[in-house]
Image (cartoon, rainbow, N blue to C red; front, side, top):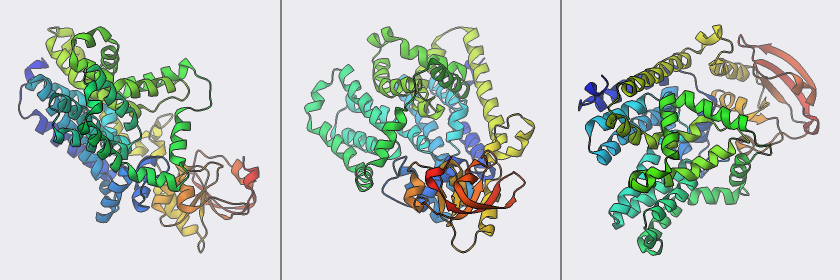
Length: 469
């Protein structure tokens, strides 16, 4: 039944229209998530790079802020990125397999992944990495097939843009080297064209290096420590990461991506499979192995599931099995249903209050809390929070008020607003999930009020940093 609807030349256009309208609706009405607010602040505090990520997401937000500060304007480049990724998935599959039905199925599979829709609404570094990943792999294949100067330069540009988006691109470069090796293209390591591509990528990454050099390489140090936390490796954490990926990428896509990856015998005969395996393995192994120490966030593996979609679509349409067609249709229905439910909860998070726990609880009340903090704030006193996660939305909605984070680690807020010192005073904002223990770290705190969503406000004097709980 599914095959009968895959020959339409208009399916891609229909998908683009439907997903763009749906994303725009959510972009207009959904409150900002913690990450979205954080990267919006990137755009407000424009810099060569930032503590936790490279600068491209901040540069794009700076452009968006020129036109306005509404939620949908901050999400414009996310909507654009999703649409571009959908087009690239379709075009790459069509170019590779020369079959309209396979390309349409790949586009449908992409549109059925709930997490891809979330990345297509909120602008985060992985949103930018979606189109760049498939463009980078496609360009690498084109360069190996037709190694002209222009293709090498384009490859270098895409590597550089990827590096400006997220540090994961460093692992992609290892994958690109592996692609050259498995494609018997060793000679290119000694080619001027290869080193021109390296130079182009290097020039684009200079802002990251310059910023880090000026800030004692704190971003590089943070990434290295973040990837290797000081905890014992546990299978349960790896399992937790895989279960979360199964749910947000859909069971069929999760299972097939891993089966394709483990099909080493197939890579001996299939050049496409061999190259894709070489490109994805370095980053896949890094994130999978490290998830035993710290569960990996599902969006970190978006590149992996995205790149296997064309192969999955081709495989599904070459199997003449009705049960597989039914399983594919059922799997896509599951993905679209989860996407719809997530979109409703994002747009109207109060609907989740009847659920325990409320999956949208973290979206509720931040704007109102920030506005209340602005009204309660006296003169130029700073706003105080207990963690950067609480600070992002308070700092965005209460801008330009300075927000100090009351912890002992260095993060982006220390760079923007400075670190709290012994004796610091200010207006303390406690989120609903924050306990009151932090109050004992001050000489004195006066309770002021709270919001309907249980954000509490205190005026506190005499921060005793060394005694903070």
